[in-house]
Length: 208
Image 1 (cartoon, rainbow, N blue to C red):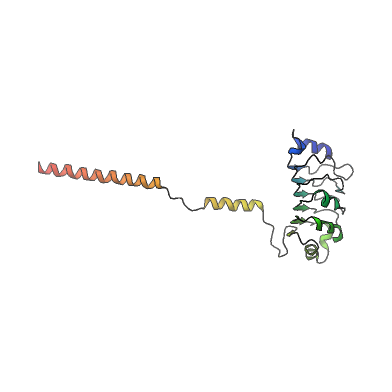
Image 2: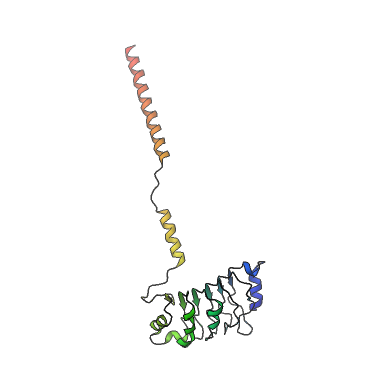
């Protein structure tokens, strides 16, 4: 399916300004450029264009709220200046499986001050000697490269964090229920009264 048609299809009767997440993976760009997206997608926060035949991002519209961009498995070799200009609030960028060969191709990403996570695995640049320390030095603002920080600690999975929160709720401290205590007290009182009454009747019967 052509990229323009796929973008329209994913609108699903919404207006572009109402779309916060857009996934158009595995469609086809006719000329290697971004197609069908306009500045009307002003509220877009997550955009995924995996394996669509992109060779350039120069026609990406201004997306000021975009924080996550997935463009893995394309043909992008550089020309990333448009990202800095049009998507200044990116925090996550996945360029894995593209044609990036030199560190100089990603130097412009220094201007993305909010960028925290960058993926370049399966790009030719990732086979360079001292690849990881070089990227962290070139882009000091990023915390994770290919899913790991400089100390090789893995990027936390948001789902794992949610599971931990759920576990805390389940295993939380037991709340003391006063109602249970009241019910127990009532039952004890009824038993005691019953025992006293029975003793009294037995005593009266003996005396008679």
